[in-house]
Amino acid sequence: MIPASGSLTHESGIKVPYSWSAGETLSRFLRALRDERKILGTRCPACRTVFVPPRKTCGTCFVDCGEWVEAGPGGVLESFTQARYDSAAHPGPRPIYGLIRLDGAGTSLLHLVEGPLEDLRIGLRVEAVFASERTGSIRDILHFRRA
Image (tube, rainbow, N blue to C red; front, side, top):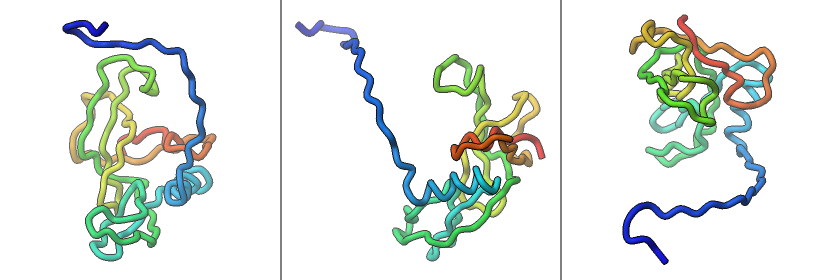
C-alpha cells in the first residue's frame, strides 16, 4: 500500500560492479596527465574553441574536434565554492571547488582549489599541482594553487 503523503523509499543490498570506458578522447587526455603531466584539449575547426576537458565533437558547430592542443598548466579562477557538508563523494573535509579557465582554453575545468577560502578571488592566477604518483585519472592533478 502506498502512503498518502511523504517519500517512498526502498532499501536494497544489490551491488552491481561494472567497468566504464573513458573512450578514445578522454583516454588520450588522461594518458597525457599520467605520462607527461600535460593538460590537453581539443579545438573545434569551425569556431576555434579549445575544450578542456576535451570533446570529440563541438556542441555548437557539430563538427569533429580532431586537433589536439596543450593548455595551462596555469589559468584563471573564474568561480569557486566550498562544500559545507560531509559526503563520501568529496575527496576530503570541506573541499574548495573552482572553475579554472586554463591558458589557451575556451572552456573551464572544474577541479579542487587549494585554500584557504578567504585568500581566493575571481580572477586569481592559479596553476596545476600534479600528483607525484599518477594513475590516469583527473586526480592526477591534485589541485590548483595560487600561481
